[in-house]
Image (cartoon, rainbow, N blue to C red; front, side):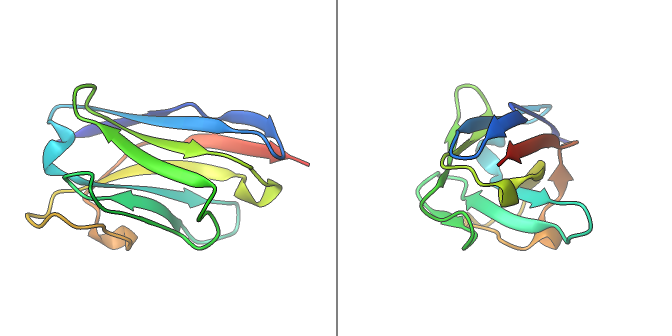
Length: 126
């Protein structure tokens, strides 16, 4: 069992930046492929970014490419999402997720993730 806790959300103006953190307890995250998803009111959960176990491979949703960066710190047992040039349409609850599959790969589908955090709200004002 791994427990994930997101932090770093908040209210920011369009064009601003935020850095989300996902801290894990219970297990080391080095064995997990990690991802960030978001869900806005009335919309389906959307893939934002993913990173494999080694950290060598990443993937991003089309709407955030070039603006968001996912990274991981094995020493701090954490994963991060750096969000730049934020837009009002980025407003959502952001979730961190962990995939415990044996293979090291970037996972982009939500149903493949085994563990989820409680989410952190990001609001971008225009």
